[in-house]
Length: 162
Image (cartoon, rainbow, N blue to C red; front, side, top):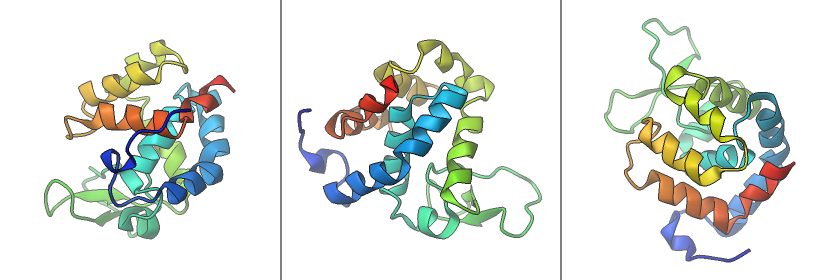
């Protein structure tokens, strides 16, 4: 494993927090990979980026580890919460626990706009990262390089071989 400058990934995350996050959620990511075909490295990498290794307000208060927005017209109490993202009116899904967030992420990536990525298999994290960005998962134009760098720094692709 080689290390790149960690500040290039996320300046407000400590390396130890990312390692602890991986330890806590790697088995769930592997289970979801086996169930749905989304690489564990992608799932863990996205969760770490989107939730600041589980420390973001969205992850702590709403158990949303992937920044999944809510587009429902009529939300029941507890279904979603308002958090600042691209605009002040962004609503994000709320989950009872992190496991539900991981499961919802897998379902989210089964949508038509991401479905073609399954053809890449579970061992091609670089193509998955570029495919997610191209399909519109994130607005950040540097999302794919950030995700790839994070996967490589933490050697997350080792879980894709399980």
